[in-house]
Length: 418
Ligand SMILES: [Zn+2]
Image 1 (spheres, rainbow, N blue to C red):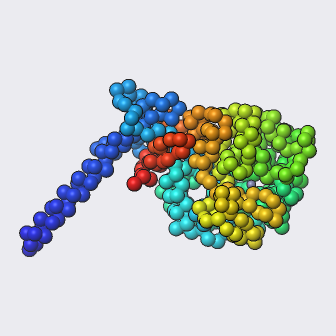
Image 2 (cartoon, rainbow, N blue to C red):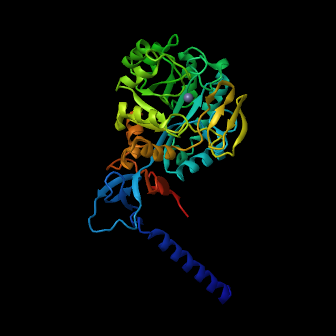
Image 3 (cartoon, helix red, strand yellow):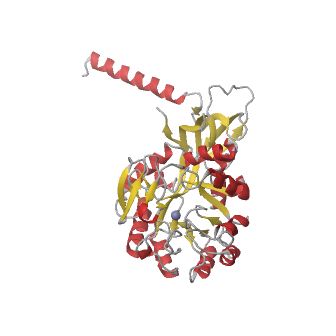
């Protein structure tokens, strides 16, 4: 028989738990209903007015615009951010042999806590063996459905790119090669057919045929790390290339003022510009010019984050190349005077693009949520709209700084600020 004090302790601890549960379910902006519906309230990110979103079975079920609540205690509410170019994070790279279940969880949770609800692990130029193995590993790890919700596909950047110094960036020329459809199909099979985007240089031999095949299979073709001029770029666009990968980067430091890869990409609205707005990859004038040329609705922000993101300044080695993380957070490959990926999340891009271009918060968020969803064919997410997946963030935006308070993925709270 239990002693009275012990029973009393159990009753008290049950009561304590109940109070905790009630308290955690009754925070002002999220309300869990008895029928598993959840209501989330905030200030709509495009118009600054209250919004109440009802979620059910992971989807957005209903949207109300209440007029009887104040906005003082509410945070901004927006679709979760989408980053389709991330090479790694928190010391782990998606290519190579350090990726495992723990690393993928750490990266995904790191993104959730910063408002990024979907991302494309991006694998760059490497050997056949390393790429095959890396795609196999990632594919196997996506059996974890909880994490897989946030990883709708992979981006393959290289190895079918320009081998010229500058244009190749930090990609190792030993592994850069001509497009090989059979090789690519092997990687795509290893990935479980999850390669959704390929970055290629259209001027290399065999590129046009490769682009045609990708488009036949609905794979997004991006132009990048390219020395191509107008003829090749225009032909690639005719064949269905639709994105410029980190426009303005993956380019030599000195180019012809008339005939270079930038003008033809800027000139054609059928190409969406993806840009890295970390303050190092592009000047603010370049950002302003690119966004002016393309329009907010045809621009997408990416981070190009690497495994060094979040590491202290110093010297590092990645795939046999000596890299330097500067005090300011730029990652350099000094031997060829080029940048080697970025160390700031796409949220920094949102903050910077507001500052650099004077665009609204709504336009900046769209460049990192709605626009990438539309351009990459992620039709189930990227907008606060009935029927879309409930990927929602609540955040403050004070003095140009975006601070994520809560993140919801598929209708479930995956991050909450302490
Ligand atoms: Zn690149």
